[in-house]
Length: 318
Image 1: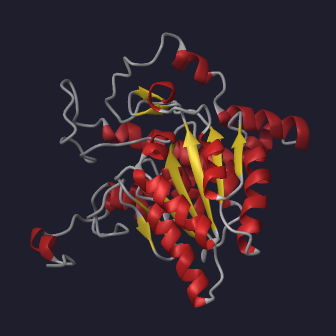
Image 2: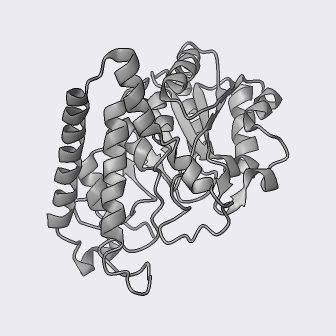
Image 3: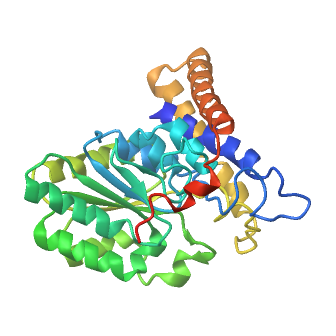
């Protein structure tokens, strides 16, 4: 779990630097080797590893526009994912999808840039497993803002009615773009809404990967055993802005500095050292391994070719 957290953090820190190439002195998201919007998940890594540690390739995960940490924890090919982000021919979708539309059928991972649109596909995938009598559970990730979308209520209602093997994970980072949860949501905790759909609701505070692992493990097993869906809300932190280039003027003074003090990666390293005898040498070794994996993936993406212009109309349904 710690290794995957490190891979995710190193990957996004590298992507962040490359993304800014060619975008100064005047920021223009169309410029540089990675054009378009970029949403980083720094700080939310526990939500990925604590869940995906329980999953296999046959389990389905649907995610949001901020997907890198979960894609990595689910086992998405990092080289192909990096190439996709760069818009290269060797990418997961040949460079057509970009970072908000990562799709890897080998490990049953997908994501969408549309708010709340992880929910229906996950419920549908869970239903398909039941109808076809195939193994596997589905996990839908969403942000706390998506819990106010109609898709949330429709998807959870059907999952509750049909007792589907699906777990809904809310990554509550307190901000729906620039709108605080307090200004947009009538209830303090979205996990309380679970009772309306006949399923258990769990709230996990502290962005703690071990707590997440323990709570989600029970929900995943319940789904595998035919016990139906669960709604889990995880308190987490978005250390960066909503997107690269976000001025973050909406944040209260001192909030970002306070979040840096509870960065889950150094906290996890300290916990491993204290409770499991994880030495400085162990830490250095795993960090070197994680960085080498990221460097190899980024170099693969940089070295890969762009699709030819005439390929633009291929794989398009008309």
